[in-house]
Image 1 (spheres, rainbow, N blue to C red):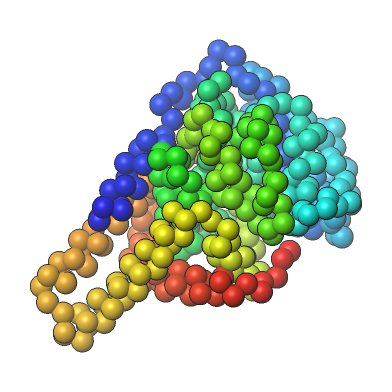
Image 2 (tube, helix red, strand yellow):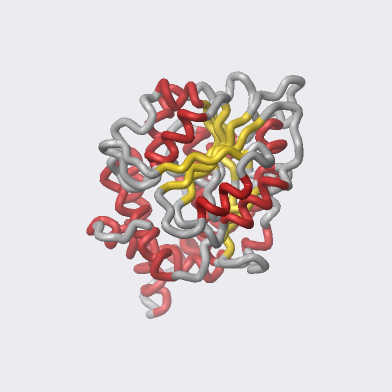
Amino acid sequence: MYFLIWVKIGLRRSLPQDTNVPSEPEPISVIIAAKNEAHNLPGLLTSLAQLESIDADYEVIIVNDHSTDDSLKILRNWEGQFGIKVIDWQDSIPGYIGKKAALQKGIEAAQYDVLAFTDADCQLSPTWLLGITRVMRPDLDYILGYSTIYRYVGDTDLRLINFERSIYYALAAAGLGWKKPITASACNMIYRKSLFNKAGGFEGISNIASGDDDLLLIKMMPYIRKAVYNPAPLMQVDCYEGKNLLKLYHKNIRRASKFRYHPPYIKTLSVFIFVYFAAFYVALIRLFTGSGDILLLSMVFAKFFTELYLSQSHLAMAHKTHIGILYFPQIFVFPLQFIYYAIRGSLGKYRWK
Protein backbone atom coordinates (compact mmCIF):
# COMPACT_ATOMS: atom_id res chain seq x y z
CA MET A 1 0.00 0.00 0.00
CA TYR A 2 2.79 2.44 0.95
CA PHE A 3 4.59 1.64 -2.29
CA LEU A 4 1.49 2.51 -4.34
CA ILE A 5 1.23 5.84 -2.48
CA TRP A 6 4.92 6.44 -3.30
CA VAL A 7 4.15 5.80 -6.97
CA LYS A 8 1.09 8.07 -6.94
CA ILE A 9 2.96 11.00 -5.39
CA GLY A 10 6.02 10.49 -7.60
CA LEU A 11 3.83 10.37 -10.71
CA ARG A 12 2.25 13.69 -9.81
CA ARG A 13 5.65 15.23 -9.10
CA SER A 14 6.94 14.18 -12.53
CA LEU A 15 4.29 15.96 -14.60
CA PRO A 16 5.21 19.23 -16.39
CA GLN A 17 3.91 22.35 -14.68
CA ASP A 18 3.87 24.56 -17.77
CA THR A 19 2.60 23.33 -21.15
CA ASN A 20 2.41 26.65 -22.98
CA VAL A 21 4.64 26.96 -26.01
CA PRO A 22 7.61 29.17 -25.04
CA SER A 23 8.22 32.34 -27.02
CA GLU A 24 11.50 30.94 -28.37
CA PRO A 25 11.32 27.12 -28.55
CA GLU A 26 14.63 25.30 -28.93
CA PRO A 27 15.60 23.52 -32.16
CA ILE A 28 15.41 19.71 -32.08
CA SER A 29 17.48 16.86 -33.51
CA VAL A 30 15.40 13.70 -34.00
CA ILE A 31 17.56 10.55 -33.91
CA ILE A 32 16.47 7.09 -35.06
CA ALA A 33 18.50 3.89 -35.47
CA ALA A 34 17.15 1.42 -38.05
CA LYS A 35 18.31 -2.15 -38.60
CA ASN A 36 16.44 -4.31 -41.11
CA GLU A 37 13.30 -2.21 -40.79
CA ALA A 38 12.28 -2.09 -44.47
CA HIS A 39 8.76 -3.25 -43.54
CA ASN A 40 8.37 -0.50 -40.92
CA LEU A 41 10.19 2.44 -42.51
CA PRO A 42 7.38 3.55 -44.89
CA GLY A 43 5.07 4.11 -41.91
CA LEU A 44 7.75 5.89 -39.90
CA LEU A 45 8.82 8.11 -42.80
CA THR A 46 5.25 9.02 -43.67
CA SER A 47 4.64 10.08 -40.07
CA LEU A 48 7.82 12.18 -40.18
CA ALA A 49 6.54 13.85 -43.35
CA GLN A 50 3.27 14.68 -41.60
CA LEU A 51 4.84 16.34 -38.54
CA GLU A 52 3.33 19.75 -37.91
CA SER A 53 5.80 22.63 -38.15
CA ILE A 54 7.08 24.35 -35.01
CA ASP A 55 8.58 27.79 -34.46
CA ALA A 56 12.08 26.32 -34.39
CA ASP A 57 14.40 24.38 -36.67
CA TYR A 58 14.56 20.61 -36.52
CA GLU A 59 16.42 17.83 -38.29
CA VAL A 60 15.84 14.09 -38.55
CA ILE A 61 18.91 11.84 -38.43
CA ILE A 62 18.26 8.20 -39.33
CA VAL A 63 21.19 5.81 -38.90
CA ASN A 64 21.08 2.69 -41.05
CA ASP A 65 22.62 0.14 -38.69
CA HIS A 66 24.14 -2.68 -40.77
CA SER A 67 20.84 -3.46 -42.51
CA THR A 68 20.84 -6.37 -44.94
CA ASP A 69 17.35 -5.70 -46.35
CA ASP A 70 16.12 -2.70 -48.38
CA SER A 71 16.27 -0.26 -45.46
CA LEU A 72 19.09 1.84 -46.90
CA LYS A 73 17.44 2.02 -50.33
CA ILE A 74 14.20 3.25 -48.78
CA LEU A 75 16.01 5.81 -46.64
CA ARG A 76 18.00 7.15 -49.61
CA ASN A 77 14.73 7.80 -51.45
CA TRP A 78 13.62 10.05 -48.59
CA GLU A 79 16.95 11.70 -47.84
CA GLY A 80 16.85 15.48 -48.12
CA GLN A 81 13.10 15.65 -47.65
CA PHE A 82 11.38 16.80 -44.46
CA GLY A 83 14.72 17.46 -42.78
CA ILE A 84 15.80 13.82 -43.14
CA LYS A 85 19.51 13.02 -43.10
CA VAL A 86 20.76 9.44 -43.52
CA ILE A 87 23.92 7.94 -42.03
CA ASP A 88 24.90 4.53 -43.41
CA TRP A 89 26.68 2.92 -40.46
CA GLN A 90 28.60 -0.20 -41.48
CA ASP A 91 31.49 0.09 -39.05
CA SER A 92 31.87 -0.70 -35.35
CA ILE A 93 33.04 0.99 -32.18
CA PRO A 94 35.18 -1.18 -29.88
CA GLY A 95 33.21 -2.21 -26.80
CA TYR A 96 29.81 -1.25 -28.25
CA ILE A 97 27.12 -3.84 -28.90
CA GLY A 98 23.44 -3.55 -29.81
CA LYS A 99 22.29 -0.29 -31.34
CA LYS A 100 24.35 2.01 -29.09
CA ALA A 101 27.07 2.50 -31.73
CA ALA A 102 24.45 3.65 -34.26
CA LEU A 103 22.91 5.98 -31.69
CA GLN A 104 26.36 7.32 -30.81
CA LYS A 105 26.97 8.25 -34.47
CA GLY A 106 23.57 9.92 -34.64
CA ILE A 107 24.22 11.91 -31.48
CA GLU A 108 27.63 13.00 -32.74
CA ALA A 109 26.07 14.19 -36.00
CA ALA A 110 23.26 16.13 -34.28
CA GLN A 111 23.66 19.89 -34.58
CA TYR A 112 21.17 20.78 -31.82
CA ASP A 113 21.28 20.27 -28.06
CA VAL A 114 17.75 18.87 -27.68
CA LEU A 115 17.75 15.25 -28.88
CA ALA A 116 14.45 13.44 -29.49
CA PHE A 117 14.51 9.65 -29.87
CA THR A 118 12.09 7.12 -31.27
CA ASP A 119 12.36 3.68 -32.91
CA ALA A 120 12.10 2.66 -36.53
CA ASP A 121 9.03 0.50 -35.86
CA CYS A 122 7.09 3.51 -34.53
CA GLN A 123 4.88 6.19 -36.04
CA LEU A 124 4.76 9.67 -34.57
CA SER A 125 1.75 11.79 -33.82
CA PRO A 126 1.67 14.81 -36.20
CA THR A 127 1.89 17.00 -33.08
CA TRP A 128 4.90 15.14 -31.60
CA LEU A 129 7.35 18.02 -32.02
CA LEU A 130 4.75 20.47 -30.77
CA GLY A 131 4.24 18.28 -27.70
CA ILE A 132 7.97 18.42 -27.03
CA THR A 133 8.23 22.19 -27.43
CA ARG A 134 5.24 22.72 -25.11
CA VAL A 135 7.19 21.05 -22.31
CA MET A 136 10.87 21.72 -23.04
CA ARG A 137 12.37 24.59 -21.03
CA PRO A 138 15.95 25.86 -20.63
CA ASP A 139 16.23 24.20 -17.20
CA LEU A 140 14.72 20.88 -18.35
CA ASP A 141 17.06 18.05 -19.35
CA TYR A 142 14.89 14.97 -19.86
CA ILE A 143 11.35 14.17 -21.05
CA LEU A 144 9.69 10.76 -21.18
CA GLY A 145 6.67 10.38 -23.47
CA TYR A 146 3.94 7.75 -23.69
CA SER A 147 3.63 5.07 -26.38
CA THR A 148 1.12 2.41 -27.37
CA ILE A 149 1.92 -1.00 -28.84
CA TYR A 150 0.10 -2.44 -31.87
CA ARG A 151 0.76 -5.59 -33.87
CA TYR A 152 -0.15 -4.00 -37.20
CA VAL A 153 -1.80 -0.88 -38.62
CA GLY A 154 -5.48 -1.00 -37.74
CA ASP A 155 -4.96 -3.24 -34.71
CA THR A 156 -6.75 -2.36 -31.47
CA ASP A 157 -4.91 -0.93 -28.49
CA LEU A 158 -6.99 -3.13 -26.18
CA ARG A 159 -4.17 -5.56 -25.56
CA LEU A 160 -2.76 -6.81 -22.28
CA ILE A 161 0.67 -5.51 -23.20
CA ASN A 162 -0.67 -1.94 -23.24
CA PHE A 163 -2.04 -2.21 -19.73
CA GLU A 164 1.27 -3.72 -18.66
CA ARG A 165 3.14 -0.84 -20.32
CA SER A 166 0.93 1.67 -18.53
CA ILE A 167 2.13 0.16 -15.25
CA TYR A 168 5.75 0.53 -16.29
CA TYR A 169 5.14 4.11 -17.41
CA ALA A 170 3.63 4.92 -14.01
CA LEU A 171 6.72 3.43 -12.35
CA ALA A 172 9.01 5.33 -14.73
CA ALA A 173 7.20 8.59 -13.98
CA ALA A 174 7.38 7.98 -10.23
CA GLY A 175 11.11 7.34 -10.57
CA LEU A 176 11.53 10.67 -12.35
CA GLY A 177 9.47 12.43 -9.69
CA TRP A 178 11.65 11.09 -6.89
CA LYS A 179 14.89 11.27 -8.94
CA LYS A 180 15.28 7.52 -8.55
CA PRO A 181 14.94 6.16 -12.12
CA ILE A 182 13.28 2.76 -12.39
CA THR A 183 12.70 2.31 -16.10
CA ALA A 184 12.36 4.27 -19.34
CA SER A 185 11.35 3.80 -22.97
CA ALA A 186 13.65 4.41 -25.93
CA CYS A 187 10.76 4.84 -28.37
CA ASN A 188 9.74 8.22 -26.96
CA MET A 189 12.29 10.10 -24.91
CA ILE A 190 14.10 13.42 -25.14
CA TYR A 191 17.32 14.53 -23.51
CA ARG A 192 20.04 17.09 -24.06
CA LYS A 193 23.23 16.32 -25.94
CA SER A 194 25.12 18.35 -23.35
CA LEU A 195 23.65 16.11 -20.61
CA PHE A 196 24.64 12.96 -22.52
CA ASN A 197 28.21 14.20 -22.87
CA LYS A 198 28.42 15.39 -19.27
CA ALA A 199 27.36 11.93 -18.07
CA GLY A 200 30.02 10.26 -20.23
CA GLY A 201 27.62 8.99 -22.89
CA PHE A 202 27.36 5.22 -23.15
CA GLU A 203 30.67 4.67 -21.38
CA GLY A 204 30.26 1.86 -18.86
CA ILE A 205 27.09 0.45 -20.45
CA SER A 206 28.16 0.21 -24.11
CA ASN A 207 28.90 -3.51 -23.74
CA ILE A 208 25.33 -4.31 -22.65
CA ALA A 209 23.00 -5.36 -25.47
CA SER A 210 20.18 -3.02 -24.39
CA GLY A 211 19.90 -0.26 -21.82
CA ASP A 212 20.11 2.75 -24.12
CA ASP A 213 17.01 3.97 -22.28
CA ASP A 214 16.81 2.89 -18.61
CA LEU A 215 20.50 2.25 -17.86
CA LEU A 216 21.42 5.48 -19.62
CA LEU A 217 18.82 7.41 -17.63
CA ILE A 218 20.20 5.99 -14.38
CA LYS A 219 23.68 7.03 -15.50
CA MET A 220 22.54 10.55 -16.40
CA MET A 221 20.31 11.22 -13.38
CA PRO A 222 23.04 12.74 -11.13
CA TYR A 223 23.56 15.40 -13.81
CA ILE A 224 19.88 16.06 -14.57
CA ARG A 225 18.54 19.37 -13.32
CA LYS A 226 14.91 18.54 -14.06
CA ALA A 227 13.10 15.60 -15.66
CA VAL A 228 9.40 15.27 -16.52
CA TYR A 229 6.92 12.73 -17.81
CA ASN A 230 4.54 13.94 -20.51
CA PRO A 231 1.74 11.43 -21.27
CA ALA A 232 -0.33 13.98 -23.25
CA PRO A 233 -1.70 12.73 -26.61
CA LEU A 234 0.16 15.56 -28.39
CA MET A 235 3.45 13.75 -27.75
CA GLN A 236 2.40 10.12 -28.00
CA VAL A 237 3.92 7.49 -30.27
CA ASP A 238 2.44 4.33 -31.80
CA CYS A 239 4.76 1.32 -32.12
CA TYR A 240 4.20 -1.75 -34.29
CA GLU A 241 5.82 -4.90 -32.94
CA GLY A 242 4.51 -7.38 -35.50
CA LYS A 243 3.23 -10.90 -34.83
CA ASN A 244 6.53 -12.70 -34.22
CA LEU A 245 5.92 -14.10 -30.73
CA LEU A 246 9.39 -15.67 -30.53
CA LYS A 247 10.97 -12.27 -31.15
CA LEU A 248 8.85 -10.73 -28.38
CA TYR A 249 9.76 -13.59 -26.07
CA HIS A 250 13.47 -12.94 -26.50
CA LYS A 251 12.93 -9.18 -26.14
CA ASN A 252 11.35 -9.75 -22.72
CA ILE A 253 14.23 -11.98 -21.67
CA ARG A 254 16.73 -9.36 -22.81
CA ARG A 255 15.00 -6.69 -20.75
CA ALA A 256 14.85 -8.89 -17.66
CA SER A 257 18.51 -9.87 -18.03
CA LYS A 258 19.58 -6.28 -17.18
CA PHE A 259 18.72 -6.91 -13.52
CA ARG A 260 22.37 -7.41 -12.52
CA TYR A 261 23.34 -4.02 -13.95
CA HIS A 262 20.77 -2.08 -11.94
CA PRO A 263 21.59 -0.12 -8.77
CA PRO A 264 20.74 -1.64 -5.35
CA TYR A 265 17.47 0.27 -4.93
CA ILE A 266 16.03 -1.18 -8.16
CA LYS A 267 17.21 -4.67 -7.24
CA THR A 268 15.55 -4.28 -3.86
CA LEU A 269 12.35 -3.05 -5.51
CA SER A 270 12.38 -5.96 -7.97
CA VAL A 271 12.77 -8.47 -5.16
CA PHE A 272 9.94 -6.77 -3.25
CA ILE A 273 7.63 -6.97 -6.29
CA PHE A 274 8.62 -10.60 -6.86
CA VAL A 275 7.69 -11.49 -3.25
CA TYR A 276 4.57 -9.31 -3.44
CA PHE A 277 3.28 -11.18 -6.50
CA ALA A 278 4.19 -14.56 -5.06
CA ALA A 279 2.30 -13.70 -1.86
CA PHE A 280 -0.67 -12.61 -4.00
CA TYR A 281 -0.89 -16.05 -5.61
CA VAL A 282 -0.59 -17.73 -2.22
CA ALA A 283 -3.45 -15.54 -0.95
CA LEU A 284 -5.63 -16.46 -3.93
CA ILE A 285 -4.97 -20.17 -3.43
CA ARG A 286 -5.90 -19.89 0.24
CA LEU A 287 -9.12 -18.04 -0.59
CA PHE A 288 -10.17 -20.50 -3.28
CA THR A 289 -9.43 -23.49 -1.06
CA GLY A 290 -11.42 -21.96 1.77
CA SER A 291 -8.44 -21.65 4.14
CA GLY A 292 -8.45 -17.83 4.10
CA ASP A 293 -10.21 -15.45 6.49
CA ILE A 294 -12.01 -12.11 6.34
CA LEU A 295 -8.79 -10.16 6.95
CA LEU A 296 -7.05 -11.86 4.03
CA LEU A 297 -10.08 -11.29 1.80
CA SER A 298 -10.16 -7.61 2.79
CA MET A 299 -6.46 -7.22 1.96
CA VAL A 300 -6.91 -8.77 -1.48
CA PHE A 301 -9.85 -6.49 -2.30
CA ALA A 302 -7.93 -3.45 -1.00
CA LYS A 303 -5.11 -4.40 -3.36
CA PHE A 304 -7.52 -4.66 -6.30
CA PHE A 305 -9.21 -1.32 -5.73
CA THR A 306 -6.00 0.59 -4.94
CA GLU A 307 -4.24 -0.70 -8.04
CA LEU A 308 -7.26 -0.06 -10.23
CA TYR A 309 -7.56 3.51 -8.95
CA LEU A 310 -3.87 4.20 -9.55
CA SER A 311 -3.87 2.66 -13.03
CA GLN A 312 -7.03 4.51 -14.08
CA SER A 313 -5.65 7.82 -12.75
CA HIS A 314 -2.56 7.35 -14.87
CA LEU A 315 -4.44 6.16 -17.97
CA ALA A 316 -6.69 9.23 -17.73
CA MET A 317 -3.60 11.42 -18.20
CA ALA A 318 -2.86 9.57 -21.46
CA HIS A 319 -6.56 9.60 -22.49
CA LYS A 320 -6.51 5.79 -22.44
CA THR A 321 -8.96 4.97 -19.65
CA HIS A 322 -10.66 2.30 -21.78
CA ILE A 323 -7.52 0.17 -21.44
CA GLY A 324 -8.34 -0.06 -17.72
CA ILE A 325 -10.81 -2.86 -18.48
CA LEU A 326 -7.76 -5.06 -19.05
CA TYR A 327 -6.80 -4.74 -15.39
CA PHE A 328 -9.09 -7.61 -14.44
CA PRO A 329 -7.43 -10.33 -16.55
CA GLN A 330 -4.03 -8.70 -16.05
CA ILE A 331 -4.08 -9.02 -12.25
CA PHE A 332 -3.81 -12.78 -12.76
CA VAL A 333 -1.52 -12.82 -15.82
CA PHE A 334 1.00 -10.06 -15.10
CA PRO A 335 2.35 -11.37 -11.76
CA LEU A 336 2.97 -14.82 -13.29
CA GLN A 337 4.68 -13.24 -16.28
CA PHE A 338 6.82 -11.03 -14.04
CA ILE A 339 7.92 -14.00 -11.94
CA TYR A 340 8.71 -16.11 -15.02
CA TYR A 341 10.81 -13.48 -16.81
CA ALA A 342 12.57 -12.54 -13.58
CA ILE A 343 13.79 -16.13 -13.33
CA ARG A 344 14.33 -16.63 -17.07
CA GLY A 345 16.13 -13.30 -17.47
CA SER A 346 18.64 -14.22 -14.77
CA LEU A 347 19.73 -17.12 -16.98
CA GLY A 348 20.44 -14.88 -20.01
CA LYS A 349 20.75 -16.64 -23.39
CA TYR A 350 18.48 -14.65 -25.67
CA ARG A 351 18.54 -13.71 -29.33
CA TRP A 352 19.43 -10.20 -30.41
CA LYS A 353 17.99 -8.64 -33.55
